[in-house]
Image 1 (cartoon, one colour):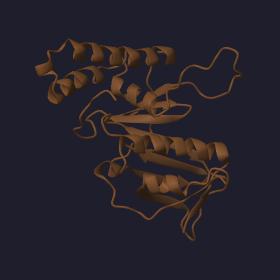
Image 2 (image 1 turned 90 degrees about the horizontal axis):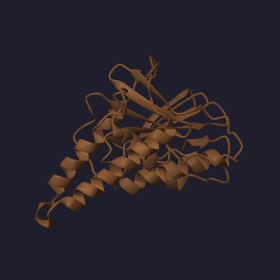
Image 3 (image 1 turned 135 degrees about the vertical axis):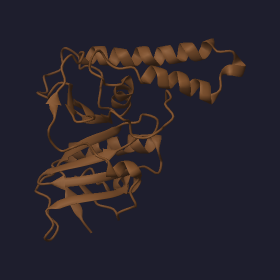
Image 4 (image 1 turned 60 degrees about the vertical axis):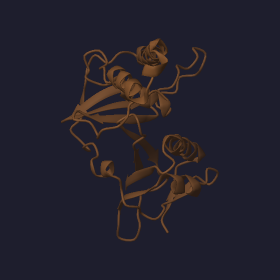
Length: 232
């Protein structure tokens, strides 16, 4: 049994929240875990967004399990969530599962370059709100007999495939970031500065990665497989 010691209960709570959101979209969700040194990266793919979600967790001590100094395994998100002890800031690595196809196609570890012209976080949140509002408006305008799943999916795909400014980032990546708690509402002006890094966009090969202080969303130019795109 491999037990991961996280730095504190806040890290454990944030990881639990991320896993719970993944399970909300897919009760049978799997996650791929990669740990090197004091960093644990948790990869997941929520259905309907066609993106990879990445949550990085800090470990209290460098990962080590016998002679292995690197962890790389795909497990059940639900079992990992059940094993989390937030008070003790520990998690037991569940038994490995047969990974879904996406788990074998992860973003590169290096070679990332900053992509310019990413709008402000407020503008990104506004873009998601505008997309949701447009979807709902266009759905209401349909005659009842035309309000079918294929038609709604086609509208959703058109809206969420639009790109943000001149970045090439699809709006669905913003929607995923907001839905998973990565793109959060702005803190009140009276709140103390957290010192966290701002939202940024990077590219490496065919991949784009939207990084926020709470996690990252990665998308590949050729997509991650055909999924139904819809507003949830």
